[in-house]
Length: 176
Image (cartoon, rainbow, N blue to C red):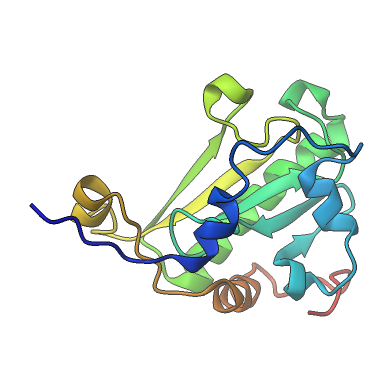
């Protein structure tokens, strides 16, 4: 049996970092992304609240796979204050609606990996995964070929999620 490969160029950046030495900085990866120069569209920040933000996953399971995170780099739900906790779940709710309305998905998976042993590769900064799903998207490619197909590139997913956001883009959002 011959194994065929579909090349996902953006995955090579991630795979190339596996096994890297421990970081030498005080900020988490997500805090560095949030603080980096550039527009929200450049950084794939889909939405911002006062305490939390929504970020497209650079290594998505499906088109539009995004994460909701507190601005502060805390590892667990119990580390959030009441305002952060409320806003986090409010943004999760809004993101699921944006997935349905903006991407036209059939369903959504929502999940949290708390701690490295739970599967979290960035366990120092809490994040809630929101993964759009379509009927038939868990086909043979993932099961037999260890390959994911993504019909939408990250910039288009960003545009479509913003367009589908409940009530439109809040005025407080930075322009993309």
